[in-house]
Image (cartoon, rainbow, N blue to C red; front, top):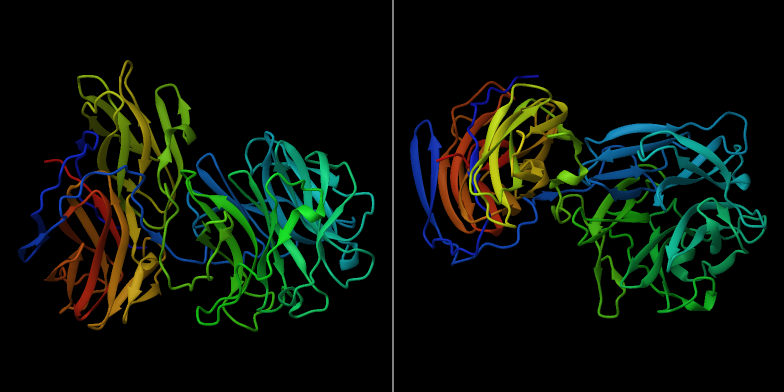
Length: 592
């Protein structure tokens, strides 16, 4: 791997964003070996807004490996995913973001041989219930008719830690059962699962039963849904209700389930809505929607969307659905990978998923993504550590620090990466109860990085969060003849390749804490000698030449001075001549 030489950058510091009107005339200065270029843009007097993070976009799928039956939960600064991992063990993945491509992966439990639960481990559900981690899963002895539900309990507060097998979770009938999970509503616990009425695989129904604790069903099962609708019976028999998940909002309780054959492209998501004030154990209080809420979309190239779970954005303001789907009508149980999109709501308070989105579509990241808060960091005296910050390559990486300094004097902190030499960060007064922001560049290495912040004794300032405001090229909207290209030397393992006058790369949802002039660094790979691009910032374009050609897969860096407005910005790169690849874009502010 080529080493990247990065010029050390000094820290920039600034006070909390206030409602200051941005200048209408804004300068864009391109700093290149061949000279400087100037461009005017207008932001129409936009004022500073509440800052929720640097934003950006991502694309499905959530991981490059097959992740059928995904169960995703967000807790204390991390997303965790478990899924049907070859049916042989239970794996938990851990990620700072909803993108699990660089996640930490760990198998947390292997079944013992020659038991009733040694084979065909399906659809593990990771849940945090009343202070403990639990994983519910289905397994058998090698014969499908012997599938039953089982549960593991975490031995610690780490969902990637050890688990203890706690046995079977069953009602008195002890019938075939899969896809179970716990549901808590109005302080009461329930178990929801897919099961057979008898001993024959004719139909899978949705059942619910009360629980006395997360390990124990304490009453008879209640049938609340049978696969009787035409769409539920597609591909059968057997006819299917399975993959149940729970969604709650404003006191309403919903069960989203999968219907139709999971081996077919018709696999879809249906909805059971509990009547307001209804009893979960009364079948008549559950209202089933006649049509699926998420179904195959051939135009988008999405087949068999189903077996979902729900999670939240890092700031808790949004709910997201995570489901698996394939890219081929004949894929069956192969090529099932996790995807995500935001949940919206209609006027009746019912969830709306919309159509499944094509893999080419860039989605705004969940709100608050990339804001790593201090309360989720590791504290030791005056030292604060932010671990598990991923980087695919060695690179100088921008860091944005949120802080509070209510005193009248500037404070100092020492920042280091992976135990290396510290850099000094100056934090001017931010004002009482106000947040300040400071940028600097730090040397990240390929793999997981830990940023440490050390405070001197008596310092009146406090760090609230950190961010890495980097935007990967391949995660943006690719237009015309632009295409994502795998590249092991690139920051995210891929680049956005632009070739031809119709190619463009659209960086959307770019957020900054305040309006002002920012340093924007583009990492360019493999540009042709005559390459030129046009940059448009919120609608104002300018054509420029790219830096001189480097050795293949060695990045050349362009530094742009861009005037950005508070709130959302859009930066578009157009190919105006030749060809080039964009690895990533960094945004930060230098000292004056």
